[in-house]
Length: 371
Ligand code: SF4
Image 1 (cartoon, rainbow, N blue to C red):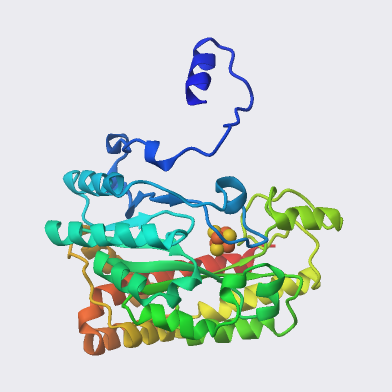
Image 2: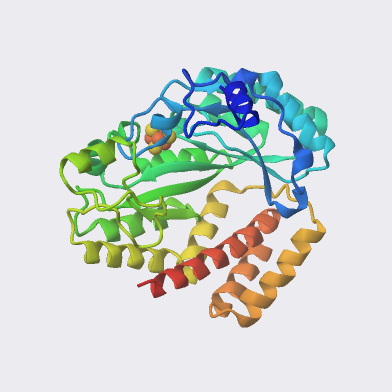
C-alpha cells in the first residue's frame, strides 16, 4: 500500500484515503532511523514490540485500530533496536510503547529472557517502562522476568474501583479480584505502577469520587492519570451512545480538559466538579508525597539513575521552584528530608517523583481555572 501511495504521490494523483487489506506484520517493520531525531531533547526513547490487545474494553480505540490479535516483532528486531540506542549513546529510560505488552504472554516471556541476557551483557544501560493489563499481577514468572530485564514502571488501565462499572465496560480482566492486592503484587517486584482512571461511566454513583480518591491513596500509585470518559469515534462506546442519541460531538480525545463529548447519566456539572475535586485531593502536596512514601516503603526500588548533568540541573531547578518558591515548600522539604534519611537507596527516584508531582500540581491548578 505504501508503494502505491508513493507511486501516486510521484504521479501527483494521491487519493484522499488508502486502506490496507490487512494489518501489517510487525516482523516487516524496519529499524527506526535515529539520525532523524535530536535525542538530547527527549526524556525517554521508544521501542515498539507489539500492537493490539486481546481484551474488549468498550471505550477502547486500540482494539478497533490495531485489532485484538496481538502482532509482535521478532526478538532479534527488538534487540537490534536496543543495540542501536546504546550505540547512539542513550543511557536513560526506554518506553516500550505497546498497547498491551503482555497481550501475548508466551512471546513476551521469550523477549524478556532475551532482554535480561542483553542487559547483563551490556551493563544494563536502560530502564524500561511499558503498558500492560492488570492480569500481569497473576503471573509471578512474568513479573520476575520483567524485573530481571530492567522494567521499572508499568502503566495499567485500572479505570475505576467500582466493579459494576468494570463489568458494564467489558473490562472483565479487572473484575473478580482485589484490585489493590493486584497492584501491590506488581509493586513488590520493585516495579512502579502508574494507573489510568476514568470518571463518567453510566454506572458511576455519587460516591465514586470519594471511592476513587481513597483507592488511589491506598494503592501507593504516585502517578494516577485520572480523566473524564471520552467516547472516541469508532469505539463500541461511541456506537452505543450514538444509538442512544447521546453523542454531542466527535471530541478531540483530550480527557483532561473538563469537556464531555456525550451526555452522561450523572449531571454533567456535578461530574466535572467531582472530577476536579478528585484531582485537587490526590495532587495536594501532602497526599501526593504520602503515596510516594508508601510506594518507596513497599518496593524499596534502587535508583539506577546516573548522576548526569541533566539530573543535576533538574535537582537544582526543583530546589528553587518547589523548595524556595513553591506554595508546598514545607511539605517538599519534609519529603526531601525523609527521602534522604529513610530512603537513601531510592533517593534519585524520590527526587524524580518530587519533580513529577510538581508537574501534576501545576496541571491541576490550571484545570481548576478552566471554564
Ligand atoms: S486492556 Fe487496554 S488496550 Fe486492551 S482493550 Fe482494554 S483499554 Fe484497550
